[in-house]
Length: 148
Image (tube, rainbow, N blue to C red; front, side, top):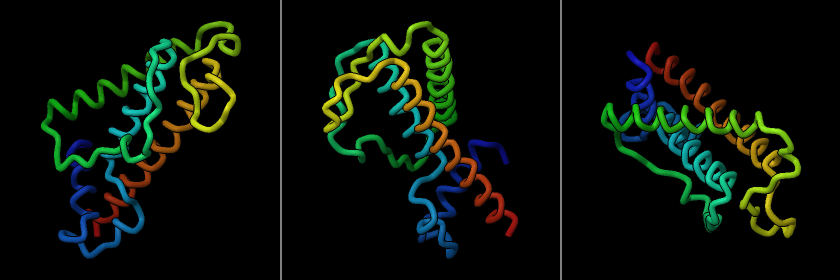
């Protein structure tokens, strides 16, 4: 079984109609959904780093998508977007004077103004790390369920 198949196997296994195992209660999202979410926010953060004027999403649910499936090319495109974003983030992180350069990202209700590039890159890294950890956990659960 390849990585892509495992991602959607996890999605099917956690669905109450196809499995008696309680994945739904442990994780609300599949691997594919987690990666889509990472790419959504990574793109938003990087566009703010490029000083594009973006509106912060009003609801967290806008950062989630529930795909039933992806074609092979759609899955590869999502992975490529993730990898491209990581490369861009690493390029930004390698710049000098990040603490003195500002993005256009303003956290709602903070009243502190736009984040510096340093703050933005740290937020992006922490967000990606959290959701990548969820993906690792889902892969472990999928492996247990497949071998069960």
